[in-house]
Structure formats: structure tokens, C-alpha cells
Length: 119
Image (cartoon, rainbow, N blue to C red; front, side, top):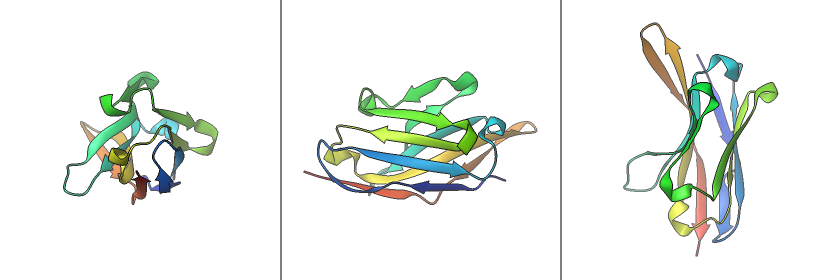
């Protein structure tokens, strides 16, 4: 089991910055993948940024050069630094963790944190 708790969302003007945090309930060394997804009203949940196998990072094209995913192993936490925010970044942001269990992968989600970017 992995519990994920996000924080750091809020309201910001276009061009501003926010930093999201995700605290895991156990060592992230034991978690195979971690990342951030977002879901805007009426849209499907989409990948924003993630750490994959070997710590390789992956970003959605729409956030490349503006968002940075990072991790602090000592704090069992993953962060998303969001700069140059745009109104289209408005969404609920979810922390995600994937743990290999047997022959499959179990996926865990946080409760989500709202990010609203005003124009």
C-alpha cells in the first residue's frame, strides 16, 4: 500500500509559478514509477511529468521547458515546479505511484490538488 498526499495547489495569474508536493507513505526507493497527472473539466486525465525506470524523466509536450519534476528520497517526496503557467494549465493535479507486484503493476493516486491559472 502507498498513500500519497499532495499539496501546493492554488490560484495564480498567468505567467506565475507554483510548486506542488507529493508525500508518499513509504520509501520512494520501493516505488517503481512516480509522477504527476492532471485532469481539466470535461477532459481525460493526462500525464504531466514522471520518473520512470532508472529515474528517467518524461514530460508532456505542453509543459516541456516550463515544468520540472524532482524528488527528495530522504523525504519520500516528489515535486512539480511549474513556471510560466498558462490558463490551459488549470486542472486538478494528481500524484501517481506505480509499484510492481508479482506480474503486474499496482497504481496509487493521491486525492488531487486544484491549480487555477487566471488570465
